[in-house]
Length: 503
Image (cartoon, rainbow, N blue to C red; front, side, top):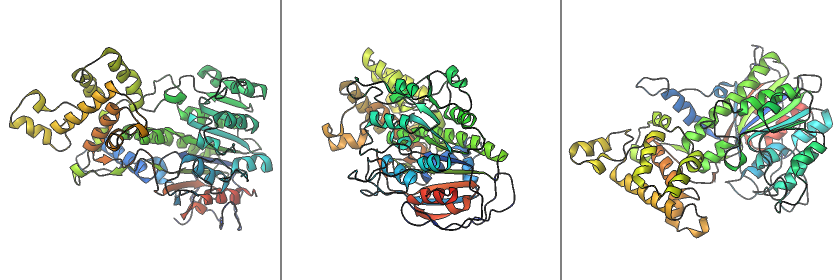
């Protein structure tokens, strides 16, 4: 996009860098090395997730004409695109794509910073900045700290599921600040190994597991912060579910800036919005939109820091891959969208499962009883034809943008509810093809609810897994213009390496 404008300056930067090849970079730079580097990764976030959020924001401004809202990092002065494929698939996973971003190397899906046969280990940009330049390093996520994306900046494993071993590498990394969800398998698969939290304390980390403890972590400490209130899979709550007393991912970014400091060393911070991916796997468009907004809030903390350090700060926002095959447009709404309907959902699929569906099953609640909650939580109402008859009822069902279910949709939802009560969540291998297409491996009643609300809003998902879409790269600050263009995801590493001077 041409010349870069700094965080608060109208002077263009004079960086001119050519980054080439997997894992390497070469070229000349007339710009100073960025002293502070922020890398934000929206897991599963690509153009559709960002567009849906922007369009949804537009609907909240009122008016009858389509209005495009904004996601603030869309206004960054430099925008590029990256391919996401890995060595085994055009529809890759977070382990391999985050490896490419972190180390500049391709590997197989499910593998973290090693070659597919584990014969070669890859050193990451975070490790190099720590070892070669003495940068302080922070790794943050809204999901588990030993999950694939955060692990890709400090771990080297042939399987992303080696959670205990990944946790050991987290501690051994010597990185300065970790914050997010709880560690998976903290005592190993058989629960008989040294607790990772105790091992972290023994290694000199301040381990804070309450908000009060986190608030008292001081600058210069080596810290491991885990959210006091954990939701599904020991991750942070979905943004739309979080209560006022919970720390958001933005709070952990602000604390990370305080802990890493703005002293002589400089720092590198990677922050993952991991629950965008989880929401899209479950085809929950509303939850995904709210977590894109939560990532936007995190970026705002970095922008505020950049305004105080305009010539020394680089901010990059990207995704690792796209999840769900999200599209804006659905067959039954033709060319119309009704994204304002998304606002009627005020609970994520995960919290609805835990707080409501589990209770329906225990209490033996009827479909009609469950639908009373659905009307309040999702805005979907049973068809008028189920309660009365006549032309007026049929007309209400057919009204564009209506959240009243048709008789066909009501029957779909009833069948899903009955399957939830009778069977619950199933494994893909135990399902018929039809069942998997309808429900994936999610609670049938809940995922059918989100599907129906999506469709009535004019959006749809094509998969419960990842897609092969390219993802955008937004950049601002020192050296940001090198992120312009269309390139492979390994080039994100290469460009960071060239800017900072590591090899």
